[in-house]
Image (cartoon, rainbow, N blue to C red; front, side, top):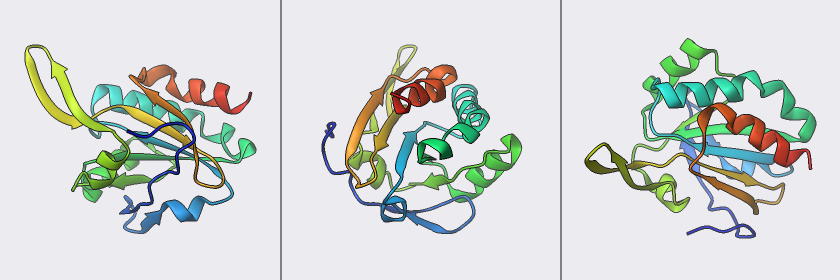
Amino acid sequence: MLHEGDKAPLFTLPSDDGTLVSLSEFTGKKLILYFYPKDDTPGCSREACAFRDAHEDFPPLNAVVIGVSADDIETHRKFREKYDIPFYLLSDTSHEMIKKYGAWGEKKSGDKINEGVLRTTYIIDEEGIILRHFSKVVPENHAEEILDYLRK
């Protein structure tokens, strides 16, 4: 389990545009790393669109947004194009990075319990230290919640 003040686990994952993206690329910036269950589902679409709509507010705060799920690159590409998402969507089909960040676990849907990506967000500082961890995120309000935190 990761806590505020911990060093963020390193990662290198493919993005929707086919490039490899690593944590080290964001040294000197705050990184908003949000994990979401599945591309093009109602809650995940609302969350991505909220980050999209607030996208212009992040650079003045020296912050970058990245989404991560277990979907493959092609699914990410279609999702990004459909909703005009202006930030990277990273693919972790092995769940390795998702698990390192504690964003994989049991989820209940009705009477069923299964494992999957948990809606979780980390704010990582300019040196790669976890500033804040958000779990049980409300998709529609989350981008504003992150911006409110960064503006303090």
